[in-house]
Image (tube, rainbow, N blue to C red):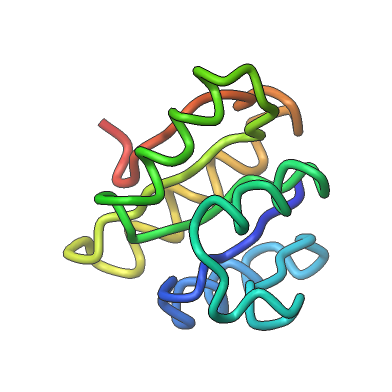
Length: 116
C-alpha cells in the first residue's frame, strides 16, 4: 500500500503508523514538493503515483476527489481521518485498512476513519 499524507495530516498519526508498519511506503506532500499545492494537484500526483491520500480535510479534498471520479480520472482513494478521534484509535483503524487491503482496492472511493 502506497500512501500520501496531505499537508495538514497530523505528524503523530504518520509516526504511529510507521512504528506499527516500519516498511510502509508513506510520504508527505512536503516530502515530494507539493507543500503549497492545491487539492486537485495533490490528487493528480497521488493518482500518477498510485497513492491513497490521507487527509483531515473533509471539506474540499473529498469534493475534489469525487470530481475526479465523475470526470473519469484515476483516483486511487482518499482516507479522511477525523481530527477528533484519539490517535491510538486512528492508528489501529489505519493499520487494519492497510494490512487488510489490496493496493488497488480503494480506487475511486473515500473511506472515513474512525471506521463506521
